[in-house]
Every structure is written in structure tokens, then in C-alpha cells.
Length: 553
Image 1 (tube, rainbow, N blue to C red):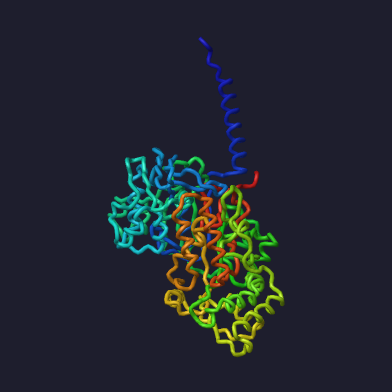
Image 2: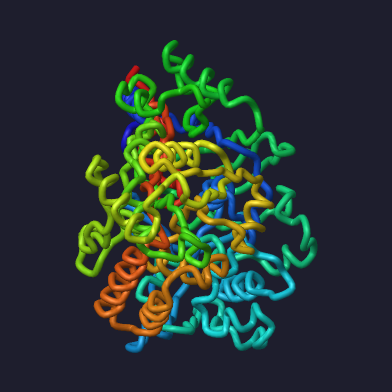
């Protein structure tokens, strides 16, 4: 029998405690588990977090951290398995069969099932509901027909075969469908939760059940939202933050920016911080200078956004392509970009850079080339005046007054300055609030309208197809453009599809009914100790793998 050695045991205990203490201290140098609490300042309040209906940027930024679809994005921004662990696609590209993870759980610990997806998708398409983003569901077979009361609910191409198998049938072959699945309208919701309180289940933390890395813990009357790490999330071991607090109160932008910058200057620790991440800037801040100086860690990245003009080709004198071309030539878009102070890029096509073409690593914009001038010169103005003379306007002081419909003065004033200075024509600006702006655009009560599009997914059809689906511009854009878009949407051959989209963009640009102005950027700021977050060019900021790095002690 071995003799019990009290001293030896005590020595081993001391050594073990010492090792544990050293390990804990080393761990704290990177990731202090007890203090992984992130504070994010958002620009405005929210209207809803219901994935079928939300549409504001703030809402999307929050949603992608509390929900998860069949797929998700990895740290490189690429699609990878999410709630679905695998899938198969039929040879014709019309049928997808998804196999769900058996360890995927809701925040209340109940399993996520294929029936939750089927219910959510058909609910989003319900013709009795009013979703502003329901068009994103039209990729499903009979999705649009059901939404327009021309088909039954059971006709929609989504069906749970069992708890862990979801069959999806598409209306047309959609090579980018996996990208679409990451959009919030495709997130699941629980039928038992929603139908007990259809109007406000998503406003109450005790009924707001979600399936993402974080869940809603508190909602303070449009002032702030507190989310906590979801202990039932299937990938919880890779989630490092304990909480994310979103500041959504409509307070003075200067106050938020000042608070953030003062904390940087005073070198406040993460525990003392009141803002770690945000994109709220007061108007007096020169964002380009802040990006260059790097003193407050202001970052700008491409946002897959095109700001553009639509010229009403049904109105005189804009029905003459020479007039439209002259207006493009005489427009100093570099001036617009310089005044915007965001180092944005003058647009030479409708589809922005950053959207892939056929080959891995290729870019649709680079392959498509430049359709419109990038630099501005006096030669442009001379060519513009020649075109106007050919159109019958030898005396430009007699050129009819044209009106620009806009939501605000900014860009419209720069355009007015360009055309009045370079051509001597008279330009009026019609500034309207959102509701009236939308009404006038819908009724085509404009000569020229300033509009923009932010991508929902990274494929050229999201820009070119969106434009073709805009009822506001019907009769203005060339008919051949619509024909090409329709053809591109009906084929499974991705190479041919992209060729048709390039041809469609060429037809559009050469009609001068659309004049792209610049490709937008998003500016935001982040404390240097916030690591491993993902901000994509879309309306997405993922904190699933983020952590707060502490200085070594």
C-alpha cells in the first residue's frame, strides 16, 4: 500500500494553481471573457426586427447577428454552411435539397426545423401582409404568383420533407441563389411564437426567440437594444462576445462622435468605453481627412452602391439622345465626389466594382469596361455644345428649363452648378421629402431624378434586374434592355447569363437614360482593440467571431 504524502500533494496543488494563474493571465492579454461587451452606435432608430419586414440599414446590421439562415458568411465574406450543414442541387439548377444540423437550436433551447423555414418563407410572401422587400422571395417557384393572389400558399416552392430536410424549387435557374439565402427574408421564425402575438412578438424580449449567435435581452423604447450571447447557438464555442449593446436613440450626431473621439484621445480602456464601433458623423467632419489621418481609426470601404440619375426620355427635350448625351458630357462628376469628402469613385457603368464575374477573382465592372468618361475636361463641354447644336439648340439661353427631383439639395446643387456653368442652361431643383419624392418618381413627374441602389447580394442582376423591375422607370429605359434582362433570368448557363447582363448594361449606358454618378462608400469607426469582425460591402456587420483584445498585463 502506498503511503499518503501530504507535503507532495500540497506541492502539486501549489504548482497547479500557479500554472492556472499564469494561463489565465496569458488569456487575458487577448480575450478577457468577463469583459467581452461591445457597444455599437447606430445612426437612427428602428421600426422592426421581424426578418420578413425589416429594411433599414440599422435593422439589417442587428438582424445578421441575431438570426441565421440556411447559409452564413465566413470571416472572408464567403458563403458557407449555416443552419444547413449540406445541400444538393439538381442538374437543371431548379431544385435545392438542404440538410439541417441536428444541433441547431433556438435561443429558448428548442430545435430549429425545416418547418420553421417553410413557415417563415410563406409568411413573408403572404399577400395579406405588406413587406417592402417581398420581391427578394420571388426566386421561389410561384413566389410572386402567391404574393399577387394568383397561386395558393401550397404552390410556393418550399417544403419541409421532415424536421431536417428542406426542399426548395425555384421559378428560374438562379446560379447566385446561395447568396440570396443569406438575405434576412430567408431567416426562419417560429410559428408557435409568431401566431400567439402576430403584431408585437418581435417587440418583446420574452417572445423574441431567434436562432443566431446573439439573442434579444432588452429593448429600451428605441433608445438602445441589448443582445446577449446565445447559449444554444450551434457554433457558440466560436462566439467570444458576451453582449452587444446597440445605441439607437436619435440623439445629436456630434455628441456621439465627440464621445467616441474623446475616449480615443484619453486612451480609455474597454471597460470604460461607451462607444466601441459606429458610423455616426456630424456634418462638419471631413471624413476623407479622418480616414487619411488614422487618428480615430475611421475606415471607408466600398458598399456596392451606385448613385445615379435617371433622365426621363419621354419629356422634351430629353427625348433626344443627343441632349441626354450632352448632359452627361457637361457634368463634372469629379466635383461631386470631391465635395462629398469620402474619396468615392466616379462611376463609369451602372454595376459597381466588387461584384464577381464568371471566373474566380474576376470583376463584372472591370470586364465590362468604362462606358462613360471618368475625367472631366473642356473638351467634354465642347462636345456637349456641339451635340446640342445638332439637336437644334444653337442658342443655349433658349434651352428649356429642366428640373431635378431630389430628396436633398447636396448632390442636386453640384449638378445644377455644372450644367449652368458649362452649358448656360437653366436648372431647377425640386426637393421633396421621402413620401412625396416616391410619389413623383412613381408618377414620372420629373425630368431628371437622383436615385441610388445598395446591393442586397453580390451579383450584377441585383443592379440590372432591380432597374428592370422598377415600375417608376417603365417607358423611359430602352425596350431591348428589358428583353435582355428577361433572357438572362431564364437560363441556367452562368456564362451565357453574364454575357447577356453585360450586353444589357451596354444597351442601358448607350441610351443615356441612366447616368451613373459615383460608387458609394460606407465610413465607420472602430476602437483598435475590436478584432475579427466582418463588415461586408452589403448591409452587413458580423460580430459572430469578434472579440475585444486587452493589453498584456
